Length: 274
Image (cartoon, rainbow, N blue to C red; front, side, top):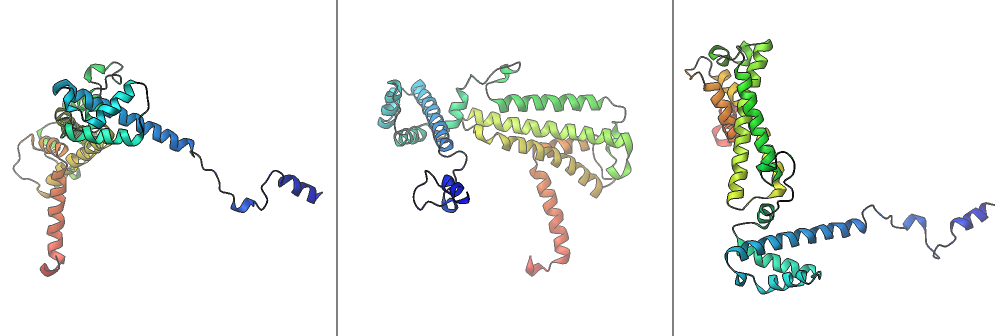
């Protein structure tokens, strides 16, 4: 019986084939590779058309090179040009549209993604999202400012001099100010990239990282200043202004922390070892 079961398990198997050495088929092979290549080809074609539209719109058809013209003609006939021809044509047009980038031109001409209530803000999702974030922090800033707990006295106090609801309202106010500066800075960067046609839609997460870093930097910079320089002469709007500027430029916190680290380092580390 054991021999019969063994024979059934090995039936239909090539002579000498062993389960221990049979390669396992991983998920996504080869269908996953084919899908990736298909998506890559589609991206190349979209960017190729965007660059050709950009050039022919202002420079005439003579601006297109031989490789690009051949690839576009094949696409117009309904053919699928080889990948190397598409890459050659893409590189040819990329040099012609510089300093603009292919991704920026493709994103600029994409009007199909603008759907919903906020489509008037533009086709790029990151522009709509950052605009809404900026409006949210603006509304939060004005809303928290209406609280009687936000005044000249409470803003001049550090976190060690307050507690309870008063401290919570003050921190929320500073977060709103930092978020307003951070979202404005990120939105300004996106606007500048769109204006100069250097926008990279694949780098949207970097702009949100800037917002997050700006909120932390604005809040931390305000508290560091109030903790290290208590009683210093500052304007009534000093804490809010520090949070706003720190949110807009998170590098200020990096400078402040670097100077503090260098000051402490100078105490313990000999000058020759720095």
